[in-house]
Image (cartoon, rainbow, N blue to C red; front, side, top):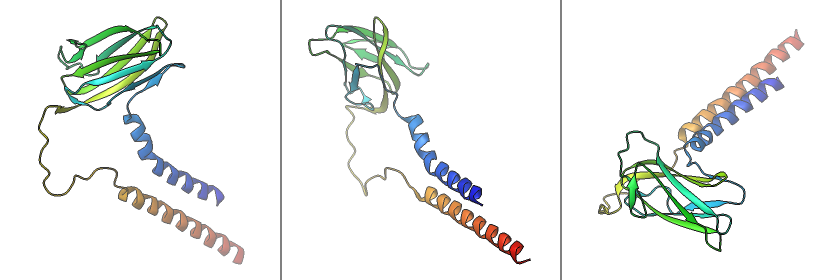
Length: 185
């Protein structure tokens, strides 16, 4: 009987954690080696919107920023770093006395891009940027009606969890009745 209760509890926990795991797989990829930190000013910019990429590491170290498109169908000339563009773009900078280096990047096509920062030893940081399919210069539409609904609707999760709790409680009651009928006989 205790085993059944544990199984029901494990199933309920699995059901509750499923959306969290799914969201983790869709989260932007970020990696920083020990002693390095990097940031992007906006991980979901609109087309043409400048994005500031900053890394902090060892003072006066040379860091190369390489940007690649994750879509094979992306045409050339969609990544602009300091005015130059191509499908794969790299630029090296020397970090300043405050151990910081900064690049301004502009994307001219929607998609997912990987920003990889390397030194002579290898990769020290990665960031992912998902460029939205809206131009930064596009006019903002006038608000009509109610605001759009955003976020998460927990109704299905709550109903599923409730059904699991009811099934578990029913299983416990059936097990108790069987046990009490065996004792009485």
